[in-house]
Image: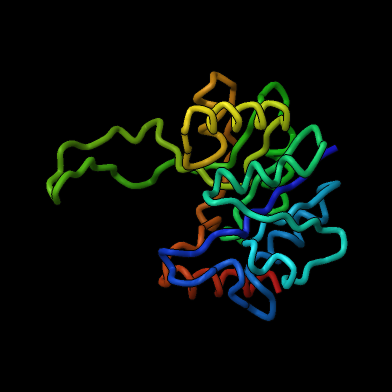
Length: 212
């Protein structure tokens, strides 16, 4: 059994609004991920802010769960709501993730986790106070995206260990890495962008026009 946890509980501090509820081409942003997940997974769990939990309309097959203070807390709330052997975690702010990406990261093989990512195409600079300190070798640098798939038992264990230590990672794969588990990578897409800043919005809107 496989489940998908879609994170839509953020406050959108950098954008200045809750981006997951922005309507693009007639539906809220989070629905693009929900609709793809429903085609693939046995369970779909949508993590939402507490104050809108009862007001957000979703398909009857989707289970709504209250989010936590931080992203990591929201993930844990979501994965505790399923008994699936494999759980895939995805950010609703990445509406352009494909069905193939969801399938690939949910087929773990010999790995405890698997993520989509893309190789860095840019030259990387370490900077301090507007001064370049050095150029970083990008040969082995990949940019992590979601969706990310995990063995649920391992992911829960890592989450509780991290909580006890007060450690917060920037994604769930970083928790498995911290505790010595093997995480694989599959090729993502440079189009699988995350809505973070206002200038991202028209770009994502144009790309989503091809899906409606």
